[in-house]
Image (cartoon, rainbow, N blue to C red):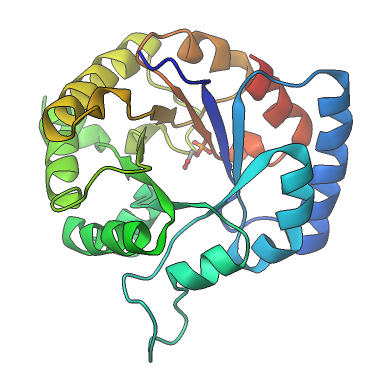
Length: 247
Ligand code: PGA
């Protein structure tokens, strides 16, 4: 169990325009005025919103996260966004290896390893996502898959600033959440791996993600191995994100 404050991170995916993002923060600020959650808050809007939301997020103490980054430093890579550009836009973290990147855009562990290293070299703190599919879980391979993703992705990574998000693929956007006990078990496996791999690795925050919502956030956050949540759909509404943050 990590002694630092728990983390609640919202991943907006490809949702919300800049004006909608501003409106979200305006309303979120009202909820924060009622009661400020005792947790570290992060938000991952689309790249096009980062610079425009940086100031308002800063005022609310919300850390800005990019949803992806290029493995290359700069150059002829049309459509890509570098770590330096992300930092310049005001973000301090980046999600690497989200299951939608892995499964819809064919990002493999080797590419993710390069992205993790690019993030570390450029001073962005990565939130590295891992997780098994339903088929892998049903065939008893969940832990092997997750540990394999960590093994390859983190090869050569020094560990500074790292956060892990365990997101079982079958739980993302499906309304089906892992039972808190299953989440705790997998977090423990991940924790042991990190403790073997890095000095002080047992303190690396491990978030749970996959259909987290106000109704189940408290039970998930109460698990001793769960250091926080990565929230997709339920982070698009300021009230539900605030309720999760306070759960
Ligand atoms: P969800 O997404 O909360 O909508 O399931 C989680 C995520 O993809 O990070």
